Length: 181
Image (tube, rainbow, N blue to C red):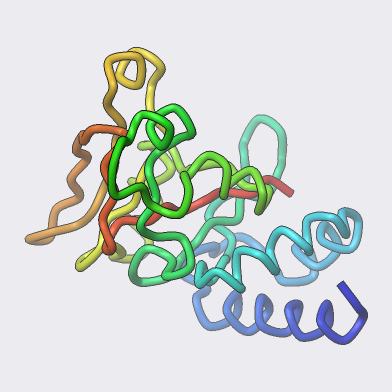
């Protein structure tokens, strides 16, 4: 990223951070900025999250490692990350009507990991998301080995975690990621 693009992204992240203090009441922007300057490769990842519609912001600080956890706070599943099978195995298994890709490969290309159920519930406690869409979630190996994958959404004021065949895809289902900085 060039200096102008980096500066623009930093401004977007700072504005979002300052507009939503309830998400991170014990943090100050100077702490975030110092961490980002110490890990410039993470700025490229945040830029990719932003470019695909994720609207990244600070989700939490890992109590054990001290790492900052950024995730996608977009109201609906990021528009640039929808209509995807869960992983390459599921995509390869589809015989007809294959989508353009799969979640695990797109997440790896961006440099993020899928939110797990606990992180997704934390996100939902800070802001209601996925009220019209849904988001694939990190899935336990035992579920995936049986052909399934997890996704979540919020309906009727409740957060729901569901399962679906990993080879399914929908225009309204995408994925949210987490980045450790």
